[in-house]
Length: 310
Image 1 (cartoon, rainbow, N blue to C red):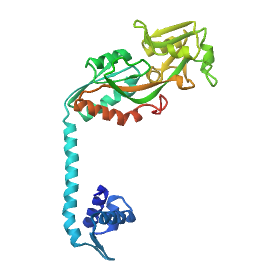
Image 2 (image 1 turned 90 degrees about the vertical axis):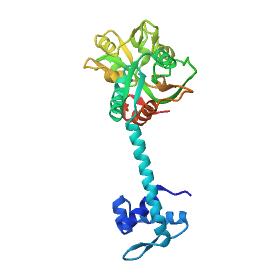
Image 3 (image 1 turned 30 degrees about the vertical axis):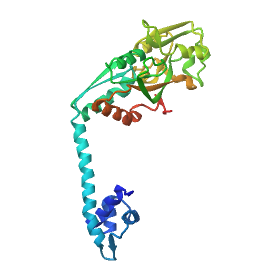
Image 4 (image 1 turned 60 degrees about the vertical axis):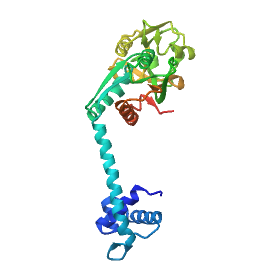
């Protein structure tokens, strides 16, 4: 039978509160909605459960027999919910999460705080790295979950991933710079100048070199700097303009000496995906963290920093 929980709840409330109107007030439902629930329940069970007069509501023989079953069903469901909550409250273990600077500050730090409050028995550890470092950590079991850009091709094919959102890439320019005003940003003017990008200068990994090439921009110099705060300081000192992920720009203590500009087109957004190992049963603590991540990510990521999913 296709019985709905709301119908059972409404039926029991009508009996307990002595009428449809009183039940509606207790449940926060309109009287017509209460009547519709009871009628739907009666159709589902195939018999009349309540006799309604101008003065009172009484149970039929069928209703008297059905009432204890409905109460028992609701009680069992509530007990199941409480049992699951108790189980979750007693989660034990360790979750190691991989991320990158910027996203770690905007999304993972508050998420980890919330998760520890919900599950004090679980230790949550953060490991930061570039996309390949995070992938290696996952492949070797050193990281349980990794959030990284999908720009760098996946090497380990035993990893599965799912999209979270697209992070914007913004231009950081000195205040008063020609690129700091006007609309739209004229990317061609980056050619012949100095562009500062994030990445690992020793491993040769840079976030945005390929994008500059695809945009037809040929800077005289591309400086690769690991830390966003250093990049902002260099821009403020007039050493160039920068391309920076919006999360990093959000937490880089942008001062009065610089401005940020959004860049037009899909070229200037990067897909952020969550990576996990495929074919392995995850620990309950890891699954609980993933569930919280998917639930809370939309609220924790600033609308100015991300594009909608898809």
